[in-house]
Image (cartoon, rainbow, N blue to C red; front, side):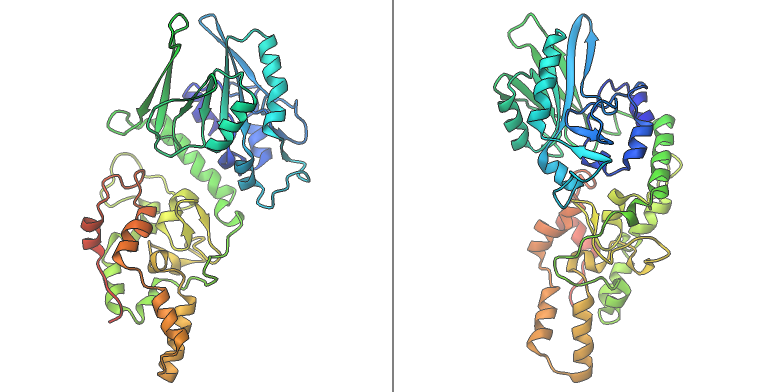
Length: 392
């Protein structure tokens, strides 16, 4: 990962929640500021040692005679994603200090060093970024990572600070122009990194292969704690659903949904851009290509798909991703088969798995068929390919 960023010419980066979910020992050993890839953060501390050098507290970059002081910060809300219990004080590997208190002495140092521009890289929610900038109004520029996935490319101003967003997941690059002699000193443009304008390169393919190997070696899918499903129920697999819903199951088997996990291993049937690199160990891919994951927040529910060997019954974009875990429903149907009595609990279990078309369109399908993964998604057109209704 760090060599890919070096290849792209990054001068300074800050650490976000996704980065810090990797092991600190790995981050420190591969992202040392002794090399060409400086990570900067005012409040992320490794090994309880603020001046260890990685991440650095700040960096001063000089371009065409302009000194730019750069630092970064991780907001409290984002920090809570790394420490779910809300307490990082006992962690001697990773500590996250108060953002504002950490930034104040750094700003003073950057001013002492005669920086012309103070630049903050903020991994924080929009509201917290604004709060930080109001508390420390010295920054000229702020690049925020806490906004929408697909920003509009417009800047905002907090005090004198120009705030920019480049979105998330590497879909856009922000281009900033500096015109010191003009009234409007900064101009910002967002560039869509679409595949029609920017082609794949062999170097990046090699980095992707390395990254997927890293996910496999660190066993990220299993090592990340799973979360109980809000329903309290567990997953049984689409084949189990098919024992009663035979026609719906047969329809599902005929669709691409049933092969979703397989495509992570082999790629789409007609894929031919480059040699396919398996994504079967990548949580961001599994979240929409297997059963039992939250596709937007990218975490596994308890009992969700782990791997092809241990959870083969949970492959594919299956029934339970839309209708919810089936353990309670199948239990109630087994009781009905034995007693032939439609009790209130059995009726409730049946109603609980139903999803009407309005709900499907507004709240279910678009969790995976979002702008990033399915920009041409049209519910009516796609629904016609997978249409299925109720029990036989």
